[in-house]
Structure formats: C-alpha cells, structure tokens
Amino acid sequence: MAHMIHHQVARFVLRVSAMLIAGVWRSRSLSEIEAALRQSPQPRRAVLVLFPLVLLFLLSLIAAQFGWIAMLVFWMGVIALVN
Image (cartoon, rainbow, N blue to C red):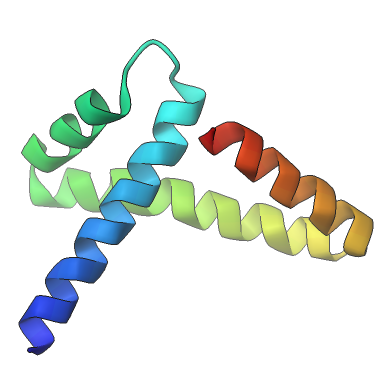
C-alpha cells in the first residue's frame, strides 16, 4: 500500500512540475514535457521536478512577507501560468 501511495504522489508531483514548466515553455505541450521528464535519468529528473516546486515555494515565502494582497497576486500568477 505504501508503494502505491508513493507512486501516486510521484506521478502527481511530476505532473505539477510539468504543468509549471509548460506554462513557461509555451512552444512545447504538456504531454511532450511529461514524456521528456519520464525519459530523463533519475538524478536529472529529480532536479527538473524539484526546481520549479522549490522556486514556487520560495516565491510564496517572499510574497507572504508583503501581506495578503501579495499572496493574492502570487496565486493569480500561478493560476495564469498553469492555464
């Protein structure tokens, strides 16, 4: 059961990172980026998947320092990026 949960979380994290990368890299589709991430070697995949998430976390901490309006702008930016 733990292996199944780990697999589902890994797929979810990979998908979220691919969505963030696809939001920035508009010339590639989401499926192309996901396929490229899945085919990359494990150490490179770990960096490519964790970098957008860590960057997003750090940006959220910076936005939180400026109050709720900055957090609102941050989340609107994330939503615009993913869509």
